[in-house]
Length: 133
Image 1 (cartoon, rainbow, N blue to C red):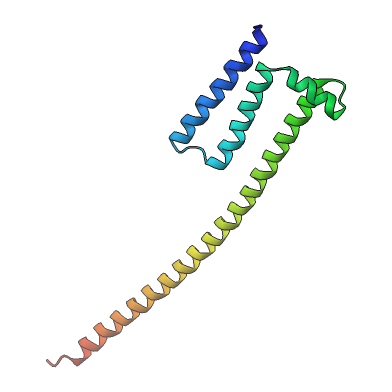
Image 2 (image 1 turned 120 degrees about the vertical axis):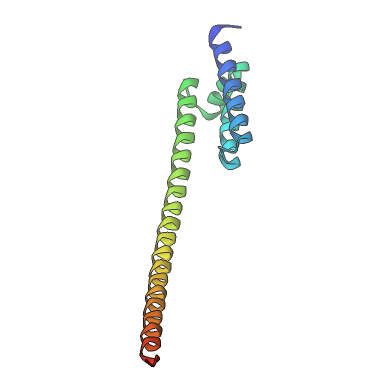
C-alpha cells in the first residue's frame, strides 16, 4: 500500500470519528451527518479500490478519472452550498417573524403597564379626595 492510499484511509477514518463525536455531543444534525458520512465512505472506497473511479470515468466517457472526481466533488460542494443557503433564508425568515412578535408583545406589555399605572394613580387620587378631615 502506498502513501496516498494510507493518507486517504487515515483521512476517512478521522472524518468518521469526528463525525460520530459531533453527533454524540449533538453539535451536528443528522441530516448533515448523512452527507458527510457518504463523502467519507466514498473517499474510503476510492482509496481502497481506485479502479472504481477508473471504471466510472470510462462508463461516463471521461478521459481522465481525476476530472470526474473533481466534477463530482464540485457538485457535492454546490449542493451543500445550496442547502445551506436555503436553511439560512428559512432561519432569517423565522428570526424576523420572532423579532416582530417580540416587538408586538413588548408594545402590548408597555400599554398594559401604562394602563395599570394610570389606573393606580386614579385610585390614589380618588382615595385621597374621599378622606374627611
